[in-house]
Length: 331
Ligand code: LMR
Image (cartoon, rainbow, N blue to C red):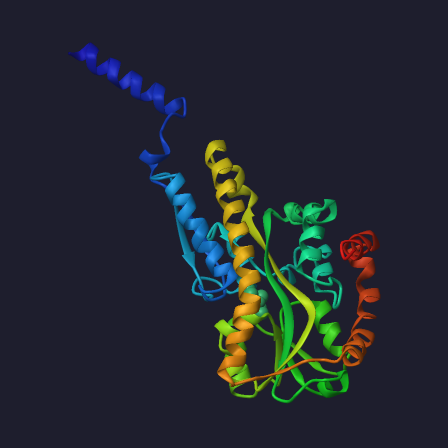
């Protein structure tokens, strides 16, 4: 009997010391996925799809908890929280990485990409792929890009030419390029978190903002902004981010499967983004709460002429070769 107990004890010690404690025994790996937008957006739907796929394919091993609408962290805090291990995945806009890397400022350059196909070509090319690892020295890993779409300018008065924006206050994301873009037309940019935009617009603390059709629709900005200029002047895309410590600490098979789930979820989210750019625009028109201002080619050219010189200011920080590669993706 005594020998038998000793044998069992010996076996237990051997199993534990050889690292054979199963993940299930230790409880599932919990992935907190934090984002700031509504669930009926490309990012909201991508995150929910990732959860569904991961929990289906890794049952009992992985649980994904999605926190939309800045419930857990706003974009200004989420990366710090990730480095502290309080959240494992997030998908901030490419405009929100300024503290961590300068090269991603490329994506904020006004009138850089002619359409979303060009954005996709650049992101899948060598420069776009290299940018995914631009945060690694800071302990963060880019797992992939997700599209939202091109931005429009909303305001409390119609914006047809750059002079119409002069002296107006616009909310921007935390990007120096976006600040320079609005300063170039004589406007006043204010860096504010996404969660505050509706109230700032509603109380008229600011005059306008820039965003995609799906964000303007899902956060009801169109209800408090009587004019939206269809400018397509800039890009709002995202990077799915995780911490290097968390990602590299995962069992290899779990990591491989999670990456596959994420790639599928991103493909799904990109499809949603293309559909929403059309459908949410139409819903805004149908609501009759906001008038869409279409620019003539000559009017658009005036915005280009004022805003494009911003590129030169940031060329040194971004790298001319990156900008050239983005321009080449337009062809
Ligand atoms: C914004 O702050 O306007 C956007 O980054 C929100 C988002 O994540 O789409």
